[in-house]
Length: 205
Ligand code: SAM
Image (cartoon, rainbow, N blue to C red; front, side, top):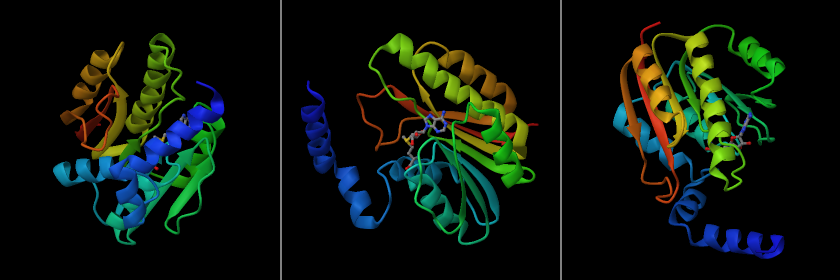
């Protein structure tokens, strides 16, 4: 497919997507918000007073939802490669999370422990599984390493994880570090996608 017709196809698929339409009507920045809200409704992840890290935050649906749940009490530090329009209660850092300087900025902004690390980071999908799977696992590993560094006892991690090479080992390692771990496929996650979300609660430290 040519680039212009590909982007026309993408726009028309977006217009038809009920989650996109609902997000627009309800004032959320992305359809992804319904993935987090479903996980939160099931597992009670967010409450006022928490310190939250949002990795892969743009355009900002998850940060927006977290701010709504924190009700003005708590802190949110968000990171993305792409720019993100400001949100009043969110400290945003633009950069590649592979970059040590970005991690350092995040640590400075955080200035202490976090209660929840959430990562919706995903690489640009090439469609070639042997390329995409290691790239997405590498992002999930960065999120896990950050969680191990910054979560206090009882903290939580939510991370996007694609079924494929490395998935089982990743889940096994997370099970050793947290008291409760679940793998979820929210209704707003496209059925054809191998995307799932791992929700780990009660970090043992
Ligand atoms: N959760 C977001 C929301 O609710 O609006 C949607 C996130 S989108 C599915 C995935 C994001 O991950 C993209 O904005 C992308 O730029 C970001 N991303 C991918 N690789 C990254 C990296 N190495 N460092 C920082 N952000 C990254």
